Picture 1 (cartoon, helix red, strand yellow):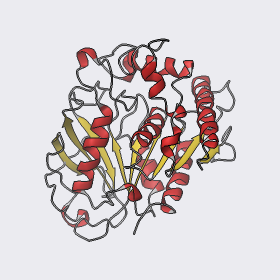
Picture 2: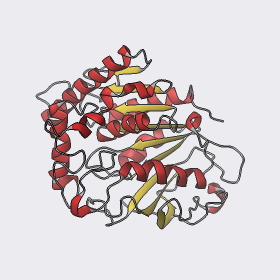
Picture 3: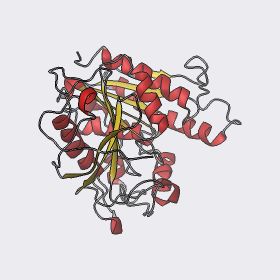
Picture 4: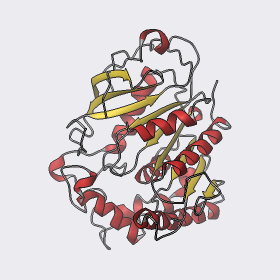
Length: 345
């Protein structure tokens, strides 16, 4: 996962097609450590890297640099940083044990936005659960919500030709990232006009979902160093579980009134085929059903793509938790919703 270079200008961005990818300057508590470079000859997607005072020591996966956060950005076809045209932005949050700058994320994004005037930003999310941790211990501050909402968003707005308000900004994510997207949209409805969850685990009052979060904290496959089960939301057992309950997206949907909402989920399909991803998707579906019921009870309109075994959703999608054909169809559909709703050229 190569990291490419970013340069330095919170002033007006330069034209990507003529002078290379845009450049960014330090600001908002971020230090730009690697300036953007294109990931390939298409000259649509670049990566850059920052250090953050809100998450100075994230846990790392193989290929990541300690203390550094990679951000991947895909620009619309024909983007010109010197022109007056401004574009909406989709923040796309990855799942656990994933990276922002994978080939899969690149392929899905460039395919979904090939004809859409939309900037897409994939920030590093580590094993964060997209939250400000309550007991980070020796890792030091793990204020991921502050990092993403208070630092990455203003840096992108300062360096690119964005529509810098909720009428031109959306957020979505897969799995842990689906949790993060709804979580962030509920906390900051002033920032986002639309939110999408792709197979997100949305109910922290669900004991199985709590086990998933705890496993994330303890599993070296989610990054090193590992941490403790109470690091993110505190102890997961009553009567010490108040933060788990308070941060659970499924139960706090009232904050989404006036925001576009879309939930995408399969049922796992044949549980004897790829049983791990089948079961994970099946259990995530239960958290989506709770969320959908609460949205309905509050009279909040939403899109619910409950696509079962995936056979009618996309070729190659069998309703599992982590299948590219399912995620591609999710993103294709969600981008279509955004183009009917957000401001855009």
